[in-house]
Image (tube, rainbow, N blue to C red; front, side):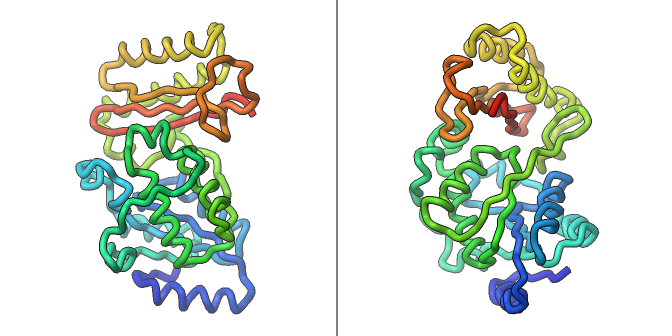
Amino acid sequence: MLKYKTVKEVQAALKAVREKKQTIGFVPTMGALHEGHLALVKEAMEDNDFVVVSIFVNPIQFNNKVDLEKYPRVIEQDIKLLEEVGCDLLFYPEFEEMYPDGEPPEVDYNVNGLDKVLEGAFRPGHFSGVITVVKRLFEIIAPDRAYFGMKDYQQLLIINTFVKNYNIPVEIVPVPTEREEDGLALSSRNRLLKPEHRREATLLYEVLKRAKIRSGFQTVEDLKRDVVRKFKKAKYAELEYFELVDLYTLKPIVTWVQSSHVIALIAAKVGDVRLIDNMIIYM
């Protein structure tokens, strides 16, 4: 596996790839890799001739300084995992390489308002930071396809919308969420959970499963009230939001028949760790 920290080195390597008329798949990450990330890499390897993974903990998408400081950084472990799976090139730049002019200003990108709700409401400026770093990485890598996990569904939808609205020639490929045996969605943050908190973290998946079958809930509000009750009984988990929304617009669903494309999204703090998850209710 090729390993580079500079834009110049990466672009030189990718120029040689393009000269061979090979397709390039790209997986952007913040490191602390797990099986969910590796599923993205494997999907990219199936679809493309050459696969690039980036590892960069992007400070401008963190609206919580403590969260940024606590984010796990295990680069040697990450390199080993990528070598084992067969990644072709790793790009792991320093801040100054990504943002040579210093921290970029917050930009209000046009993504049809998708960045203003749910995570956008709870984490102001987050999606501006996400789009900024993805835009920068796309400019450096210029991939044919880029792979994003469905666990961060709102992010996936926003990136896809951004690419379409700004005519960026990259195909965005969604990859299903990987889960632990007990249903907890794989996340780099899971390793920060204390054992007692880890056990209660499965509550997110449990309420999503109940939403999926809708058993016993005549209305959407009945379901949402039940979720609130379950979290109030929890010892360590605190609900931030649980919403049923249209899969493509993220507009809230008031009745079960309002839309034929519905997804449930949830965010909660378990101990000191913030987790998100989602499940498609029907398409």
